[in-house]
Image (cartoon, rainbow, N blue to C red; front, top):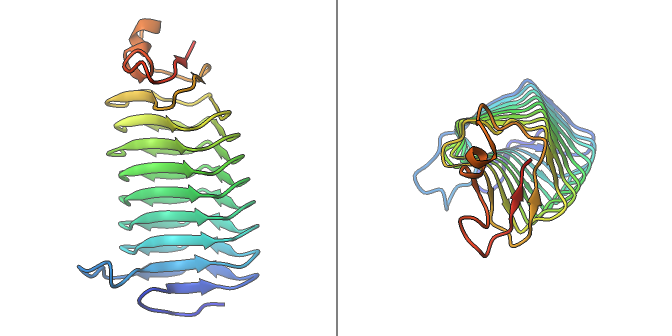
Length: 239
């Protein structure tokens, strides 16, 4: 059901088998964010549907904690700390959401086997992050105009990152302490500092991605960060 709360709690609390549909939530943000934390939609039980909601100027717009089999679909979240946050959650679908001007657009923490598809992430500090999260499917998302990284993999394994567009960011894709992820068929064109960054000691294979109109391997290599820039880093194979 829906339980309006305040201070450290969520504006909307979703219990088991709940549906949250076409709500509008906007919260004024006090100067002292250590005293007031606004998470307007929180789901902590199974089989929740969160759809067609508009959430602005809040902490974590949609927060899933230990959640399974939730559908988070067609929501708009803007101006918050994190647009959609999954923590210790598995087997959820995050589909066709619009996440703009947040600190983090979409963040998965210790969350495995989720589907993240067809989302638009624009003008966030960081677009989409997988942090200690394995075996997720990240496909057909558009990540643009991030002031930092478009797609970040941090201590991950077994994820499929395929068919996404990560362009116009400072860094297209960043890989840190991650192994065994599949990164293919992504458009990584037109990012400012690095098209792709490898900060791990191991080699990374990112063949079959689109690098824009760069003329040859040397031109691509100049825009990826790996062992050429720092001998402690692993090499990136891109062709």
